[in-house]
Image 1: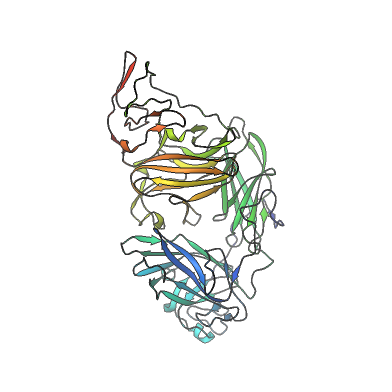
Image 2: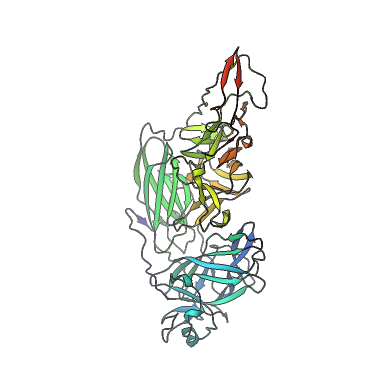
Length: 576
């Protein structure tokens, strides 16, 4: 068994440690509670099921209620846990703690995996140990064999290994056969007391040849003679501020350091005003917020998910100035999109190819964009924000160019099989490729994806610090909670070329709701699939088949006796 180093992650610049209660400001999404421990009886740690195109994983204790990963922790301890105390073996060493694959007694769990409920998967189901977070000197081995006594445990061979914290490839993947008999219990051994956080993925292939894979699943094991209680691990929180990616925004980054990976939220504060509570992912929480021009005293408080897991901590207050003229805190008045066409007199009779209207359509090809909600006349209003300009959703199309096409990386099974083509708008804008984020200005609520109308699948996800995806929106019905002032960016992915119309609803806590449709033109597409651009309460301007801005006609405008004639061309476009 390989021993981990378990070092502290990072050096704090400014800290205040171990605040009682929840710190200051508004509370995080949930009040911290004591973690519930599973320390006895039989438990299937990983139980995957096929739901749509992905594998969802839960845990099932014998005779108990199914629980989601992270909802409970496991406890390896008590008088019945055996300690190897004779001689070193191939897998286990003197002093290792382990629980056997059989003979559960008080204080001793029996831990296994079950793939009996993945009927849609044919053949082997692969279980991979993708990441480990170990205590000082810690290591873990999962192995086969009837290791019910110390001598038998010491006799365990490397060939009995199922999974291991040892980074060797042979120790990180195990295959089981799907079906009613797809259940196995194993011996689990830990080389030191402390907190172990183990991350798994489960994958397989359906009868029609489709690859399915779960999102990363993380379980926490507390190893020792007593359960964690009363004393939580010390944390350190630091805060940094800088100008945001969007004009008028301030970017805040809080880093929470401790032994292990703290679970909880960071609450960002402007003086005594709570800006938002953001979940800690990979030891960090980030957000961008509208702050008024001038001097601010900013702070960040870490609120743990569990009271007996990690302790609350607060950063030292940070003085930050939003420059005058930066647009901070100013809600811009929507500026009408300028018209470049000649307003004819008299107005010609509208036809299917030439519709009267007051707005012109644009295809947005680069820069930072946000599907945003703000308050207008006390009511929620959704729009696409580009810098300081708020565009009516019916007047713009977001371009996903051919340059955004890539081969789907491994680990993104929710989008398809690795290696298949996918078009992605990155988390940060690149030259010629825009980024589309979200913004809640002055109001909190929920951002829901109501409908996806397009040739393929559309999804929004972010990449965590360990490189694994965290899906935010993955089809109709998915939603994301937004705190007031929250601003973020993630990756949009589309599985096929063509035109997508995504219907969203912003539902605020006290200012009503607003529904809108945002159009994405992905890769090569046909102009007839683009909707007519239409502003709320106004007319519309028909698509002219233009390959750049929709209002830049490739026809010829002739003004004769006050009448306008548009000659359109080039219906196929989007290849640039």
